[in-house]
Image (cartoon, rainbow over all chains, first blue to last red; front, side, top):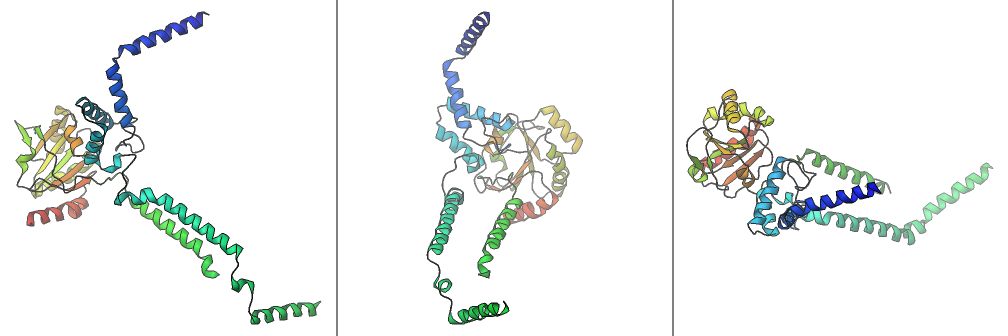
Length: 153
Length: 175
């Protein structure tokens, strides 16, 4: 019982502390973090700008925050970063000539693989004329070989 | 029949070739979207001299902007190459002292030599962001009209100077 009371007390206290951070601030932070999750950190390339603790990622989060405070939109932030670092910062890069292989490559591979598979199936179902009917010379050779085997018995 | 048996081998060879090309690419070298675009404007205080330096002050000459910091280990590797390059007096080299402490930056130049015509101070890294700097050292070649013509990521080597920088400078000065 005491444990439960203590837990309730703690929960209430955390609630109070969280309520102290003003609501607009929290909303702004959430906005910054949301877009930062869609952006790649250039220093440690496997992390987003939201996750990275690199100096540059911190600076960029500050920059994004200030842009939002100045009334800029998410699209403005993306444009700002692409102008400086290129499409590489976007985890969701636009489709254009330099990225068509990136976007279309997997689908093209899938189509090619399905095509090859279908072709194989069709071949199995309708064997080639050549496979089905060996010509006269081949038949003659086969007969000779079979006859020779019979003789040896 | 025999040629069909070679198809898996051909596919394998193509795959190996693709991966081999992939291995020779450096994923840390991200092409800058700023090449052939006007260099981002700046007005920054100078490290050793009085008063600020602006981008417009460099108009009319071909110059190098070299991003450096006293905390940057690779800059130490690059530094003798820059000192040597500056001694040849081909073009002025402006240092962008990136997110550094003033006294440490001055001590660093005193200890290792100062190849810079002047160094400008980017204490909070904002100009660095405008130039798309993500790893120090980086070097930009700017032409007389204030356009960025080339970016070298990572420490400059004597080979990089000979093969990337000098031919472009010659071309820009000739034109």
